[in-house]
Image (cartoon, rainbow, N blue to C red; front, side, top):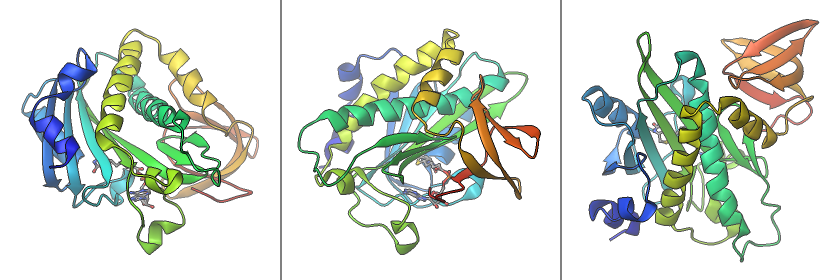
Length: 276
Ligand code: BT5
């Protein structure tokens, strides 16, 4: 039996990660349309904050704006975390910030392990607002969804990481990569999953303890975008300009044609090298 499935079904993970909240309940599914859909359904039924939904395969994995997220069986980490954070709705972009910091940190540990092949640079980078790239190709994506009233009723933070895919479909092969491809070896999904739960909880508790501005600083430090000339596709419009900063709620500040724009979402490409 697959180690990840076995550990979840046997309830081994909670003991090992020693978290207080994240992973306090873990639901494993062999196949599901989308772990985010499932997590939203469970959250609306009252499942506790910290519940994690993990699937071996997603048949309708989702990116932002209803895009597809390719999630074949046995190869990736496809998971969604239910949260009930007591933070203002305006701070909700920070949930994506902490998720990408947690993924980044968990992958960085891997990078320090020996046996990484020399032919790759293995440069990890966060790409605003929701991607983790390695050598410019997308390794992981995050999709945060909210149920809002005057407060956040619940949030679902979906994380997709390409772990052991050897190949990608033609339309993704130029833009996507996996840990397997970058390191030339099989990566243990269970170990990576545990690292993510531990790291996510640490960042999450910092967020709840009003450490948002510092978290954004750390996030910004893992990007390479300030001062760059970029195009941003947002709501059917394309804005071209220079990135001035990433501000306190994680929003990107762009100077374009003498005007200043704030973006909370959007697809960014560098104007000199349209990657990602
Ligand atoms: C994202 O959207 O990057 C968010 C992806 C979130 C996936 C997780 S998996 C667990 C949870 N359950 C879900 O249903 N979703 C979450 P976006 O920035 O919109 O990027 C989507 C684009 O990435 C697609 O249009 C493709 O171009 C590309 N793409 C699709 N599958 C990919 C993959 N496996 N690896 C890299 N790129 C991919």
